Length: 81
Image 1 (tube, helix red, strand yellow):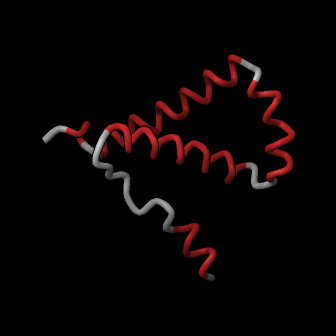
Image 2 (tube, one colour):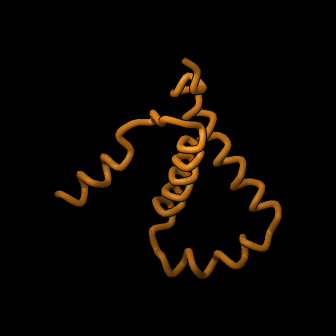
């Protein structure tokens, strides 16, 4: 049960102090999404060389991170006072 609780609370807030922290959170969210959709670490490692050398796949990853960052930036009112 404790493991399930930890999985449910890994993201207590989208609030960050700075845009850099927001970007780091966006990357963490993107990485966590990959681990969630492909929980088999051996498969992840097996597939990594294929997508790591594919420019289209890498651009798509950037798009996912950008979407998460846009969400975080909006939640933080674009870090305006």
